Image 1 (cartoon, rainbow, N blue to C red):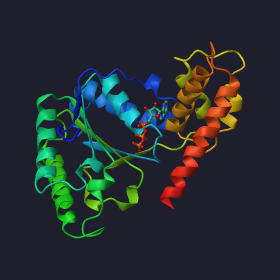
Image 2 (tube, helix red, strand yellow):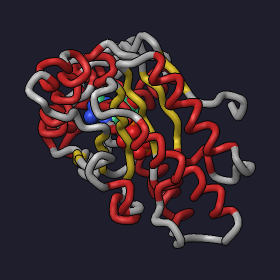
Image 3 (cartoon, rainbow, N blue to C red):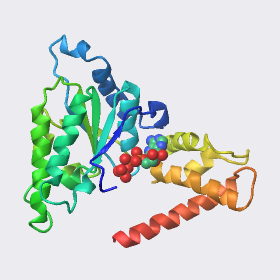
Length: 270
Ligand code: ATP
């Protein structure tokens, strides 16, 4: 809701097991779990722990899920906000929200701060839509930069941010000591889609006609979010037909429905 300043989760239950595929991203992000769990290992050698990393990839590929899994694996609180919440905000609200977020996170350190859709605030300054509304976005971005510079690199706060367009971000965000690491979170390959299907059929009652290999081959270009959507849609279709278990045809019908939905969405965009 509009009233909440940002989201805060104390006991994050998500683990790396919930994130299917993305093996390279997981290896890279595993180090951040280590930073949070065992900072001494680094600081005793004189190393500065990175303050932030950028998760870059198309929508629905698991960036939020991965950021949450870091918090879950390291057993630290997860503070999050979305850049899109800052669009059309009253003057001063964005900056003060960012300030409050960092203040609370620092009190609870070690902690993860996650900023989804950072491009909505982090677009290069001086470019973009109507003037005026832009000023507030710039204030928010400046506050974010100030906060990132304001805490020591070994303070136990790590900021993860997600974007699907790293190239439009203000260069200042990508400077050393800020988001100087980028982790790509790409659309899943065949094998990864299989693993994502497996994660999402686990809670479902399926019968032995369901062929995950075949379903994975039918879904090139689909994101993890699309696959999660297909699995739930298949369950709804089976329930509508009063079935006792979900079968292959329900999944195929669900794929058609999800493709239909995606086509509609693309029509609106273009
Ligand atoms: P956006 O850029 O649209 O915010 P995102 O990359 O942050 O998307 P998530 O919100 O993490 O994507 O993914 C949405 C949902 O899709 C997840 O909660 C999960 O159910 C499913 N999902 C996406 N990727 C994966 C994955 N790699 N493994 C398992 N589930 C996934």
